[in-house]
Amino acid sequence: GGGGDEESAMLTWEEEVVVKRFYEGKIFESCLEFPKYSRSDKIAATAATFFKRFYLSNSVMEFDPKVMVPTCIFMASKCEGTMSADQSIGEFVSLTGKGNETGIAEFWSQDAG
Image (cartoon, rainbow, N blue to C red):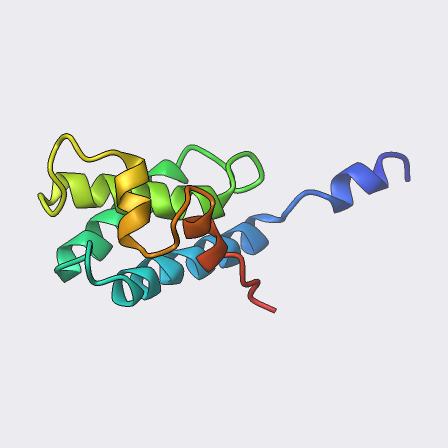
């Protein structure tokens, strides 16, 4: 029928759950990969909570999880006190050893399949 192309570009609820779970796993992998800023399991757990709460009212079709994962880790690092209040996102990214703001997102650029 008409509009099939538009409908096929949308994720089903089940597909969106799969995408969210994949990126939730990336939060924990990232905290293991970059222990300099993730000193405890609290950071990963807090970041995962922020991620889940954000996607309760937003869609992965609207907000790229590749951006939300490092954002949630950054915010969790701030909340759990592993970064001082005056440290910026740029300093956070430099702690990962990637060297630039887009570098941290590259870590999550590997697709599930």
